[in-house]
Amino acid sequence: MSSRHTPVDLFGENGMRANLPINLINVADTQEIPNSQEIFVYRDCGASIIIDILQKADIEDPEAAAKFHLDAIAEENDSMEHHSIIMQRPITNDLSPIVLDGRQVLKKAGSIHHLRTLFALFRVKGKNHDVVVSFNIPIETGQGRGRNGAVTVEQEQLIALDFYRAVDSLRIVDYNLFAV
Image 1 (cartoon, rainbow, N blue to C red):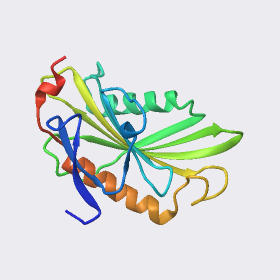
Image 2: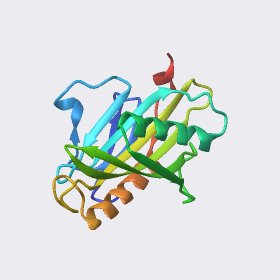
Image 3: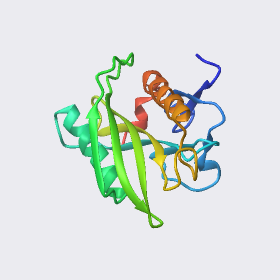
């Protein structure tokens, strides 16, 4: 493991575990969030990490299910336009996630924002749940890269590496997490 990452317990001590960047802010420390969600934000930019336990999409094809969940995120963001591509990168996780690289164009506070979402869908076998990991990376927030929460090119590259480390390392410790 790199010195930039540390194992983090998700959904309690025995729910899930993943290697995440050190020095993230856990949003649950400052505000109430749903029990089915973990949210972290980077200290030095507007990027965020959201891990959701969702009701399983009633779609058999895992790639179509992944696109369904990512489209739902874009809709929640009131995206003006969005698209995604399936990443064919080898993943070393036994849970076999489907990985997408999505782009959204949003209108916020009168300016156009560009958001990159690195997204992984984990279908939980034998349970009625999907686990979604999304890294939301603001590329442009109306004032150029590296300004107003937008990432620099270097930050974007590091966050992409953080995403793959998290996806590769994510483990379900206790499947009773999905009992309901």
